[in-house]
Image (tube, rainbow, N blue to C red; front, side, top):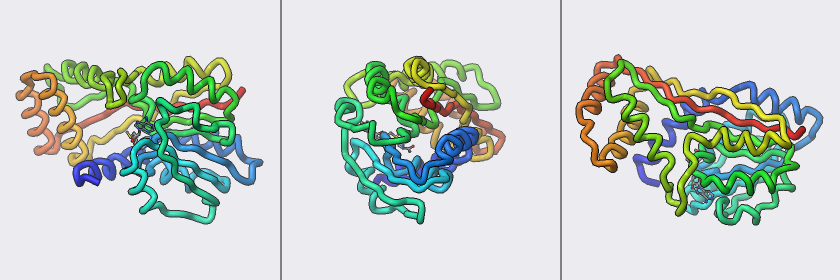
Length: 262
Ligand SMILES: C[S@@+](CC[C@H](N)C(=O)[O-])C[C@H]1O[C@@H](n2cnc3c(N)ncnc32)[C@H](O)[C@@H]1O
């Protein structure tokens, strides 16, 4: 895996871990308190960060299936996976979970989950996903970007950056269709509230002290600025200087979505 990508994933994983909403774990563990084991499917599992977060925090014994379209991420995950006594079985599937969603037998699973996955999906996916999961006991998608981030100290061009970033989030993320981007949580809540009790809980990244993370995020902003052929050099210089002087703060709003069958 590319070194930049690997470093970013590692940095993000520790931030994600500290940001995820803890109440959701209580709700899931409480729901399954009488189950000896649960079967879980992780969509867009990537290199396995959702598994690493959940495996020790879920009380039950676990059977996991991992689904991703990327052979490279899946191989990396498979090679590096760590087990514990609670993990009874794992299996890895290379599946296009957007175009071949109906190939997945969701009725085999108690818990359908994913992290940092919903925002890249096209709108039509959500209705189909709900149709296939109308009877699923629990659906849990963590770390859904909600359209807001803030660097401090303030700069006049801040709003412009958030706007082009959000526009980029709604562009085609390599799947041939526009992504829902920051609208993902409101869309999934809308489809699931007919059959499930739904929760949208805060999982904001507060990386005010993490200057390395901020530098990486700034690099993404720079790429988007360049893609849009905008001249926001002053903003970039201002942000880099604040990071260097260690007086930069950064907050990005995410939320976690949980649906429990009514
Ligand atoms: C932002 S990453 C999130 C990975 C991981 N869940 C995490 O939290 O780090 C999105 C993942 O979705 C996968 N993905 C993208 N399109 C997909 C598709 N059509 N079917 C299955 N997985 C897909 C990517 O390969 C990538 O691993």
